Image 1 (cartoon, rainbow, N blue to C red):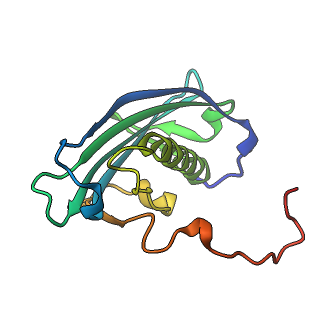
Image 2: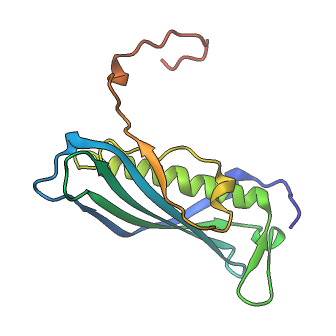
Length: 179
């Protein structure tokens, strides 16, 4: 479909649902032994042209990779977002069968909002758990929209390596400092 300009300010998140949220961490599990995390994500959009709605499902499965732990900590989350975009019919068409084609600019915006909001929710939910050092990496939202080929397992390194980031110095280089 044609790449038309969209109005990002007119994308309205109508609903968010935590469909599934689970962390399994055995009592014997030692968080200090975690070396890295393996994870896979799934992103699946759908549209309802009559109601100008876009549904975006985001799911993630995470497993710690440790030294010395016999059983790893695991996590599984599934979020559903529903967005309203007033002129969706101008940016999407239904295809014969069950598919649809839509404006890549709008598709990118929905994937970006879904992924970045999911990152923040996960960051908050993981605090105080065995997954607290996992931060979902930043990705190109276009990669989320590509059909999965082969394995989707990825690796994320610990969010807090040797140094405490809060102790690092950040020299001011901009005149746009919040006050």
